[in-house]
Amino acid sequence: MANLKSSRCYFLLAFQFLVLIQTKVLCYQYKVGDLDAWGIPTSANPQVYTYWSKYHTLKIGDSLLFLYPPSQDSLIQVTEQSYTSCNLTDPVLYMNNGNSLFNITAYGDFYFTSGEKGHCEKNQKLHISVLSATAPAYSPSNGPSAFSPSYPTVFGSIPQPPSSALSASSSHSLSIPVFMASLTGFLVCALVGGIM
Ligand SMILES: *[C@@H]1O[C@H](CO)[C@@H](O)[C@H](O)[C@H]1NC(C)=O
Ligand SMILES: *[C@@H]1O[C@H](CO)[C@@H](O)[C@H](O)[C@H]1NC(C)=O
Image (tube, rainbow, N blue to C red):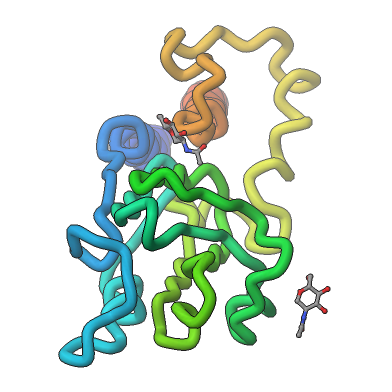
């Protein structure tokens, strides 16, 4: 009985490490729309950005590359409301260097369009939803931060993850929570295996 329980537990643990490795290694840089240029969609494919986001699963650590002639176009991140109404005033983020990399560092919905007048109305707009890769492990309403406060009090000092995970680089921001989840899993497994 004890063996069965703990082996199932270790299986889950192995799965968690798999997730950890995937989130660390498999980060992609996507050319938005699979196109070489961010621009007004052609009449042949007016919904190119809508379809593109529908068929791509984006996650934290991935990035979106928008390429365009800087003299002719730009990229802005906007709120959902501004996205819907094509309101270009007060964007969240404005980039116009022709080679704009948007790094995904958080879960949620992100809305982009062109900062040029009239382009949004012509469907040069992109909405992406970033879901947690480890969503089932988190309670949906609280998110990953909800369970972090308990670690220091429950387990005392925590062994440091490898330095790459510790670096301030936002693209690795998921690694620390996942590492901690794995660590907790390991400790729980050890506990269950020991007691049962
Ligand atoms: C556009 O957005 C700005 C800033 O959020 C807001 O002040 C303005 O009222 C909006 N304009 C329209 C037409 O909704
Ligand atoms: C995204 O990251 C790259 C390098 O990793 C950086 O050059 C770029 O400025 C970042 N983009 C934003 C919008 O911060």
